[in-house]
Length: 582
Ligand code: FES
Ligand code: MG
Image 1 (cartoon, rainbow, N blue to C red):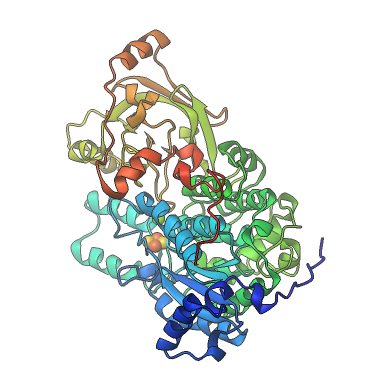
Image 2 (cartoon, rainbow, N blue to C red):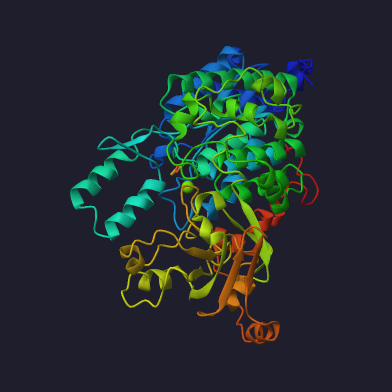
């Protein structure tokens, strides 16, 4: 298991980039003269691995603000190891600013990453991402492209701070917003919270989608060991960037490609890690899509099986009640967490540093066992996610039991149905809304087709009149996603979605719905004959887009249980693309 693959040192002529730069012909002349136009001499590139650095920096992505500097550290590492770095900007996908949702564009980034790699004279690639969808987008593209690749995670931002209180991304925004709606927080304090909740560059520092997905990238072996836990503002992050630059050059020489790393077991490891972390529900969609790119049929059942075995041991908000990613790093980080859950991992899987996962975590230590708990003292005994099925979700839906009021795990209540997000928003704060805390709030037409793009609308606001009565959790059901920093009894990702005629489209206000998490079921308590009648009256919905990227999206997006990839982007779809003609 601990055997290291002997490095295969490839002769320079075997480099893919040599097809551009080596031939003594007119094309070769063109490529060489244009590199020289930038001031490089043959000593800079000839015979050297050319390393693409896919940089998802932008002026409006605070999570990646430091990438403008970090890319220079990666280049430094590439140069030290004898490679030739070229930076290629890629779609930034800033979670907060891109509307209607970055999920609409995850596959666009995946396409861009794949084609940037394929079309340029490069031998290996460093992927710079971190903000939610950038991790799966970049990895999906790099997996399909197939060249040696290493992932550089942005790292979490520092803890938030307001009046000496620790603030967590997202989670505390929702929490204090409810207090503000209830009239408990004034303008001045609200402004101070706005200024204190995000204090440095880096991605969200709760266990949201970003921290979940970068941990998953590390667990499948695509980052240097420990990389995903380093805070963005820490000097160790700079050193990690340079080390990744050095390592990718070696990976090219060893011809260590994603397919040698991303085995089925590597994905099962990632799922176990996700469970132990108390992961974002978004992980389900992204991991399924990533695994399918790598040729593995990972499904919702793999998540449910892992969730029954692997307890949540990372005491990070929102599943935990106190700590954030900065604390997780000081407590030993992901390597220490993986050490704790070794009974649930396959330790023989290869990783980007050329070593097996088991070797990478062997000497890891937990420095604070309240943050990273032992398996015997978890913060939640069963895993982070449960997959429910029933007549309301034939192909499944998910809930995060670790982050909701436990009395809702078995619950029957009347539906209060909203046909779309604006309809919900228009009435949710009205004082005469006919709603009790036992109601189940249903939002539909918020899935991949209906949203469109499956926005993070699944944590529906608690109706204001109930907030004022002190209600802080209710059962909510939708075909939407929710932010990984969200919490509550939110049932998400209903598949098939309402917009394409899933049973969710047939629910009426007042119908009873039964949620039974221990038995993994969700039922609309309406007879089959009545449902058949309602279905017959259903008018099919037109595609949301008539042109542009959305036109392609509407025709090719798959449902949540399949990972929402475009059908034609899956690596096995059609004959291999092959190398470009030069
Ligand atoms: Fe970028 Fe949360 S907004 S990770
Ligand atoms: Mg998010």
